[in-house]
Length: 246
Image (cartoon, rainbow, N blue to C red; front, side, top):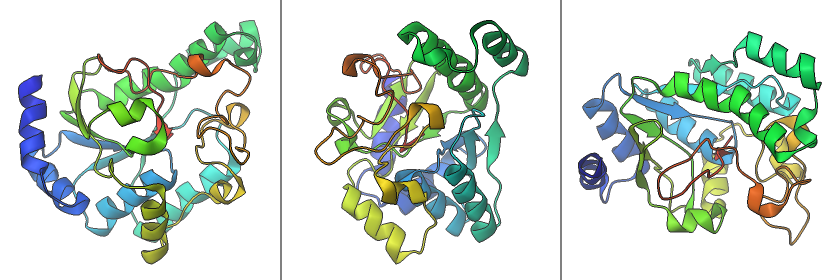
C-alpha cells in the first residue's frame, strides 16, 4: 500500500497534470481509469486526457437522477473530442426493489434511506467500474472542503484496493475556470447558476452567497452527515465524490 503511493509520488513529483497523466498512462497501461461527473474539475481532466489522446479509460456513474444540464455537457464532450465515456448504471433489480417498497424520494426521509440510495446508485456501480484497475484518477481539489485540505494528491483507497491520484489537487477554482476558458472546454451551465457541486437533481441545489461550498448537497441533512462514501479511505472516511466531482 504505502509502497504504491510512494512510487506514484516519486513518479509524478514536479510534473504538470499532462506530464503526470501521460507517464502514469504508460506505466499502468490498461489499469488506469478516470471518473467524471462533468463538473468543472472533471472537464479539465477530460480535456487533458482526450486532447492528448491518453490511453486512460473515462467513465461516469449514470444514477438515473441527473440534471438535464449534465446530460447536455456529457453530450457536448462526446461531440467535441470524439471520445468514449463509459456509463455505469445501478443494478435494475435493486433500484426497482427500493423504489417499489419506499417510493421514488425515500432519500428525503432519513439519512439511512439516503445512504441506501447512494449505495445502490453510486457505490455499487463505482466498485464495478474500478475493479481490476491499479490507479484511479479524480478531479478532487484541496480547497473544496476543510476535510480535503488534510488529504494528499496521491492516496491509497483501502476499500477499492488501488491508488488514487488527483492531478489538479493544488489548483484553485480560479485556475480551473481560467483553464476552461483558455481551452474552450465545455462545462455544465448550472455552474453559472450557483451550483459549485452538481450531483443528482433531487439532492442538489444552488449555493447562496456566503454559504459553504457543499451547502447545496443534501441540504435537508445535518452538515456532519453529508457524505455518500464514494471517496472513503482509511484516513478520510466517507468523503463525497464531487464531481470534482460527481
